[in-house]
Length: 289
Length: 315
Image (cartoon, rainbow over all chains, first blue to last red; front, top):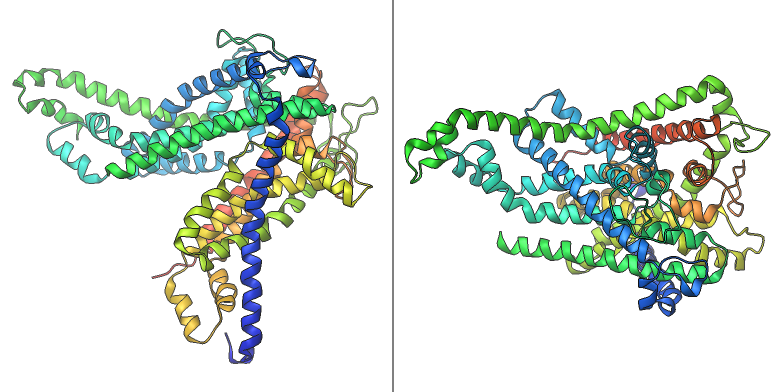
């Protein structure tokens, strides 16, 4: 601050300070209250429609009979397959980057590439999945094609989270293992990974919870909105909760909007359960270190 | 070097026989390294896949539609009998949503970040930050529902001329969605400013407001700007909320109360429809996807560069 801009009127300056503080605080309140309003609105709209039948029934053109059975089953399939693909690939890539990779241009390319992939819009992954998995690999509009697409989508996040977990493992642990004559893989397999596992799992669960909320890439893949049977193999057509929600929200009738709200409650509860699991894992891990 | 001492682990209590497997073990070690490298390579293949698919299919599109026509045309109607392939209306829609979302998210996010970093106690910060981050964890289709059933009716109450589908509603919910991105990243940047700078300013007689706005914010500017760019890039790539709330009317307009179509919403519209694979209409999604990819990629790289180039280095 230069002497020219120095303003000795303390009263006015402090008043301005109080106004600014109040502005900042109201920004926080705005964001927080919006969250509350959103949750209250969805709950108020959806709860009257929640019932066991809603969970058990298949979608229907008659709102009173419609349910989300196929959507829930599709989401569970999607979660399992996406996790099964992205977890080993992500952890493998993270172990390579943290424990094996030499410091050269190739490694830097991998890192820059992963950072940039994390910012690619999800619908672009949908275009990739549609062309590569649905057409070139001829998987059709199947659960597997959708899961592979979502796995690629969350891979950067899984890698970044796993690398952080691996970096948190103290080097002394590795050195002790090497000192006893263990090979690099033995050290990683028996000493580094077990310690890093809770952190890795936390990151993977959080990325999976992002994947099951995704709609756009699966619409590209061609997930159907009206499915009256659950998938029985990875090559079956499917629907998932977000797509069912999209479909009902896009209809003009108010009853379908309420169904969408009820499905949103179910989706949010699943996400809440996943996040709670992740947080529990993280807390347990913190205590042990 | 580790691989050559393969069997030594077994030395603890095991007979020297274990050393027999040394050659086998060395092979395994090498193979594992290769497998892990291949896992890392998947991400590179993803990028190559995206680029090849987008450019490959777009080339087919640009053989029939001139690149100049595509980039400068002011009418977008590939699905009508009277076809037109000017992407400007889609860019217009995307820009309108991004600007509107920024008007919500940048001030709210930055002010929240300043509150959390400069005013809030440690305890408040620990509670409030995760609550704000929940906003980013809610699926975008839920924001679409919220826009259509809550925000739009409110807008129509105050501005009766508002359409059922309008840019404002989409922009507001996208803005809410990206608040945590701005607040979290900016807060990290503000918190990283050393205490000494603040104390020096207090020592000169500055008030808290003056310290925050004239010392801390300028010192953290690179991080703040990087968070702004990232958030805007997220708003440009957002799909479901704008598809549901802003509608499907590609037009050149600056009015927030009219229906517009973004690049992302157009791609969804085509993939929901019955457009046959391999036709010119179908290829439009790759050309539009390519533009979307390039714009968001450029912004992400810019944000990384800003962080690196203008970072204030302390001590």
